[in-house]
Length: 447
Ligand code: TRP
Image (tube, rainbow, N blue to C red):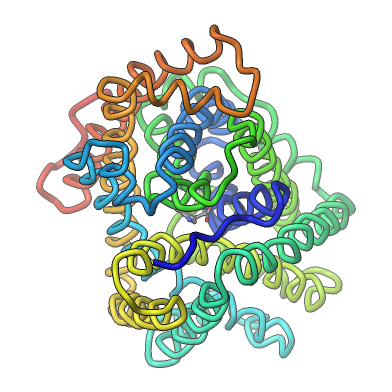
């Protein structure tokens, strides 16, 4: 096996991890999750979940990745507990699964970028979305998006992933900030901020059964947890970095970008009197597409917005492909480029049904969000908290002056708080799946 790669700089690692975290989930998902779950009420619960569950959970993946310096499956054997590789297998499988439809959405973004230049979706945004979101052209753009992802991953950790993240992540922030300033000049922007930022305690209390699982799912998804991505990235990390500090920076940065996206999206929607609560995977494209058609300088705003979305989607998709690629590179004699092309082709094929039928995409998304992702994080928490606690705490404290109190509190969060939060989410999530599938007529628990 060739010598294992590492990040060139600590900043490079942080930017790559932020690039993975900041994705469609922040810009396209977060404002709409918030919209469907009561705006500011969702925001409050979500922020609590991010810091109480998301932050300790990202440290779990860092601990496993850096200690083992292996891909997310072999990591567990390396740590002396091969049977727990099931946690890595679930995660790697989920990365493969999620990338298949993430890339279909990436294809839509490419399409909308082109559509912004020509103004193609300005007329009837809903009809445009319905026309382009499924069918042979959606398959073709899904292929183009996967090609871009494969191209970057083929170049390797330092030359491909790190270098591209150093360009993409700062661009995302600068452009999104510019859009936020522009959005603040729209009339009725104030009502958007109000909806977004003034929580109503009654709404939180009344809807906690639906807000909580959405918030946990969103927190995991946006922090790129539960699919081995952060295990893979931290496995290329040096021993002298502080995991809590890097993790903290990544969590805060990712949260700020999500918040920033809300500052762009809500003023636009309120400016046009669009209800932000209407759901579905196409909503963002339909509502924002429609909005860009009606506002001043809509073409330019559309181009910038979808370009930001493309960069965000790409820098996330490469982390998903890296999970599977690192496993195959370390277990076969094929070169990294060959593996990236091979895995990319399989992911493309798995995504074809989602590009042809929107029901597939919805189901792929729902299963990943409600089931696979929480299950993988749960397995990891049980492993670290109860099977491997000494090694976990030891690794957390490497390269940093973490106090004994911090590591003890962290360990108990891993042991109790994270599993409890996930179990609740899983139960509510499975209930939701059964209701959607028509097996259950309506929710029984906490309804
Ligand atoms: N975090 C990304 C987003 O918000 C999605 C993503 C990329 C992801 N890699 C992941 C989610 C790994 C879970 C696991 O869009």
